[in-house]
Image (cartoon, rainbow, N blue to C red):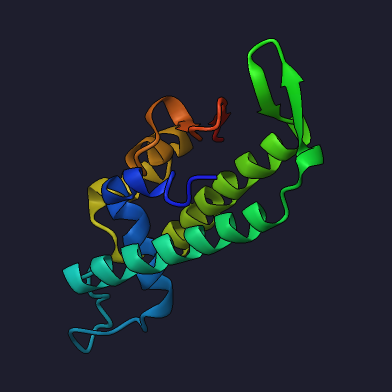
Length: 146
């Protein structure tokens, strides 16, 4: 399995990376009125790196579980069985779910435009870089994200 097959789209995951770091960063005040600071470029950079590492780790662990029995012959050649394909899709869906929950939790630190994305999950997924809410796994099938 190609190790970095998902990371090609990670450069477009700006919002997702902000959420990853925002969860780890303490909320800071800029005045005595407890105004929350917006997410910084450094948090974005660190968040993207953390997200890539988490996703790589999950994919790598999943890949170690694959065996010869996880594939079948079809008229299109050798393909992964449906249960294993679903596991791959679940990895992507899990990352999207985590990013969405982090975004909701840290909504106050987002710009007004990014806050609007939280009201429409499909737009949020599009902003993460998944056109038409689909992931091309490069393994002969796509995953639909919800």
